[in-house]
Length: 111
Length: 117
Picture (spheres, rainbow over the protein chains, first blue to last red):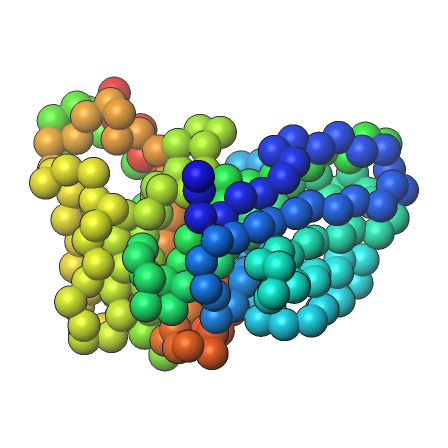
């Protein structure tokens, strides 16, 4: 079992739909990152959070430390949101430079 | 610079040749990561540098791969005697020093696309 699991692996939505991507982790973390990777493009950081909730525009990230679970929500989705969304757990003192990545969720938003 | 800079952005080489990929992290970022991403796949950890500490080389796939970081800033990933399976995008990321309380935001470079013929 991977230490960081994302679901779903693939997600297709219609424009305007509310989208949720989930991330569960089995290690102790000091922070959790949500990242976005567009096709053929680089990776950009969306959020870093260690508790509660953060909001940026139409994007909302939440984390429940007790349940070791984080969600990324997209409200009023748009085709330009189509990308791979990746969560990464910062596990201080752990392996791989303290950072463990999920395998990503590929989101496709249809007009 | 304002972001993480990687060069070259594209590199085509012949099997058996050596290649060097460069990463210039954000100034002040002591943590630097190298990842490899094959087409349609996730990020594969290669190596991690933190300040003057010994690097975590646990992800390097073979002894043909090596990396160094000079002066705590620029890093070079070297692949010797390249093979076709080395073809991938090589990504570099930097952040402030990780602590038990977390770290700063992660910043990725645009990557170096390596094609081995």
